[in-house]
Image (tube, rainbow, N blue to C red; front, side):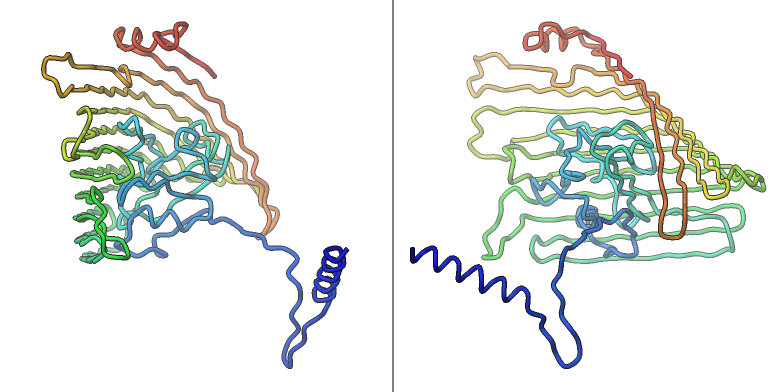
Length: 411
């Protein structure tokens, strides 16, 4: 009975307190009925520190979270969807990591210093460059254009005491009425991280550098050709949350773009790009003490691709048509070395020379009713084919999946 009376008194007191209107000399304070959190769609480079990491940059979006296995190369998730359910591109280019444990996300191959913005989409809204369930991130690099002749040279340097990270970057940009070139270099050298009490976190250091270059030439009144290159190399990368580190993560990403601005009231822009990228990744546990069995795990990924994107406008409608495709080859190996030299090595093809072919068509209509309201209607169709080229790898997988075929295709 006493508990019932006490509970009734507590509820009555709360109800009376909630119904009161608090007044001050200058304003009234009203009860908040709800809070709407709107996630950021586009992140601009102007909002970021020039020496911050790409991981810190992406965390500004309410849609993106990071899986942190160390101080470098965090794995981005979109609306809590992991990378196998999402899509990450660099300037619309499909790139596939070479690590079976996702220790080399695509975001690790771009620096904030050569990034203009990140376009983040949820669900099917990110299917412009391929099929996705969770959404997409398109990392758009800083892009110059032809115009009045000018030079721009910059130097950045920094130091972070928490892991003795030395940062150095430099950039140079030039343009005139017919030609432009952008070049960017960034180097990071970090030792082991130290937590708040000064204790060292072992296997958390990394060393890397990134080179980015873009050059374009105007070949007509409304035509432009552009070539780009990214070379990124990280060595001695530690992962405290994992039993292995990375001795090498290397990427070369190239592209050639042709762009036309039509003299038309309907068609506004036509952009076609072909690209190639190669990723090499080597996991390493030789620097870890008391390893039960040493493993060597190299991975390789090669991708050829293209897209052709056409934009048009009519009245309140903005149309986008994108035809894209890519071919990827992924190969990853795992070799185990027993501590007893008399025992045999153990070997497995974790990615048994897998070929992936994709061809897709995407169509979008953005219907703007006013400055503050719009409706987006989009649709896409894609053909996806996987083929295992290694008979040894196929036989190994058929131990676990007896009915597995060497080839699978689906729309």
